[in-house]
Figure 1 (spheres, rainbow, N blue to C red):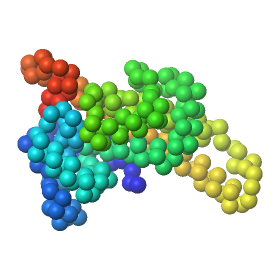
Figure 2 (figure 1 turned 135 degrees about the vertical axis):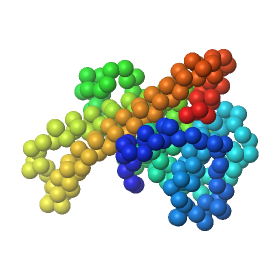
Figure 3 (figure 1 turned 60 degrees about the vertical axis):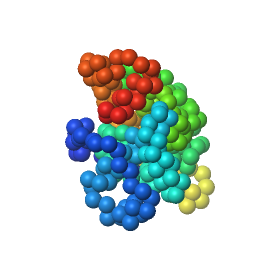
Figure 4 (figure 1 turned 90 degrees about the horizontal axis):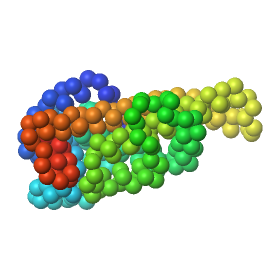
Length: 257
């Protein structure tokens, strides 16, 4: 799986881009153009699908929802994730891609992620991460929340969901770094054949990059969560979301993002 896109570059443009009514390609049209879709159309499709997915359980446009459901039925969430992977890191589709990536990592290496999480928690993660990060959820909680989001069933506050996923990633990154530090100088002590020892050395060499990727995931999700809060604050100042239920306010924030 490809690594998350850089959080620099297009992210600033994404924050100021004005999006019109979401337009999601039909499955047939996407199939014809996916390989050669121009960047602007691809970005528009990524943002449209992200908004529709996040608003699916919040009373959004039924016709657009049906089109998204039809698309995912034909291609699966993997195709949407591929579309999101090209989006700016600090955007809704960029955040969904990072959640999808995080979920995939947990599925592919449940024992390794659980070990890293336990090591990170044992290292008093609060002294290593940004102040204000909420108590991190477990891997099961993270996967369950992301599953709801990717299924279009999540109706909670997206900024909180992103921050909790970020907290989990922070702890896992800390655990990976702890594992790396503890394994320093132990390469020659690994029992087994030459192949086993070589695998151990290669695994250890990958740890710093894995920790860096997790940290970047966390920072990107926190950035999008902060942007969502800024949108909400702006809406309140302008009188756009001062009334209504929490769910209605969340929908308004997603629409205005």
